[in-house]
Image 1: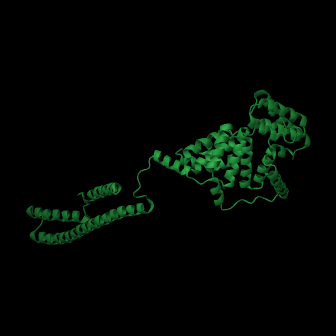
Image 2: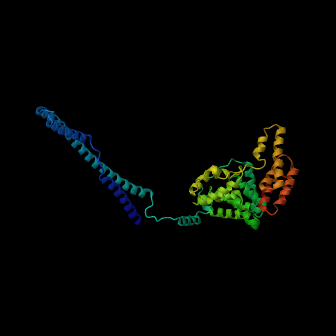
Length: 411
């Protein structure tokens, strides 16, 4: 009720100010006929002066008076008609303005009743955040979200992998505590698009590993849950992300999904800094780069930050030879191809030997050496890298994956 009283009073005040300004007397424009009347009156006075001075005879003066008087009467009639028209125009203007003001006020109230929220109290920032957090705690679970997914993406058929997964399912029923088998099952279920089955297998793997489960295991579980739920971050997926980031704070996949979670839940103020910082830490070939760039400007706007893609941190160029670099080299002459690849590999090796680098760079060097057929050098790099990251299980997992093609690469 207070809202309606306040808006009514303010509307009345606005209308009153406008009407007072309209009704206030103002200097009206003088019609042209008024100047004619004044001229003819002056001419009559001049006739009398001419008679007194003897310039005009009485007969000439009488004819002049008759002609000027006729013109004066015509000008006076024109003046009266002009003044009447001004009065009618003024009254009509006031009626139109009054009706327009009344229609504007009534229209404003009608529009507010349609798109506004009459009766709702103000929502300060603290109250909005509290409501968002309440909604977060009451959001659907993982199972509910998966049941509501309208459709699932059909991946290209892979009969060989499907046969392998079917065999793995049978084996895991007989050997439920097989860590390697569960790892393969979760990975291949995800590769077939069976994300629901993949996340179940991944959860069994984490439960089996216990405290030995790495941050990568938890991040993989969160990603499988999110994909199984059609991109929705459930409370269970959030818990997996939190645990993964505790163990691996700089994991790019986990940071991307953390930002996505806050963006989904109405907290762009928390999503934007996560994605902005992730952009600064990413290389141009990072898999999360494209989805972030598609959304971050809108997220920044909702967070109250004025920015553009050009003003945001720019991803770094990939360090060392990438798969694309090596594929490009396939079209070169053999000697140019070899020189290009060897130059990039040598540059990466020198930098790692001098300045060190993250496990991803060591893994890239191992992969490049394998592509070049230098399995002994790849093994040496792998052994050196394992010594550098001996206390970081998540880094060792990256190195093991890169060195998988090497015989005897397992520690």
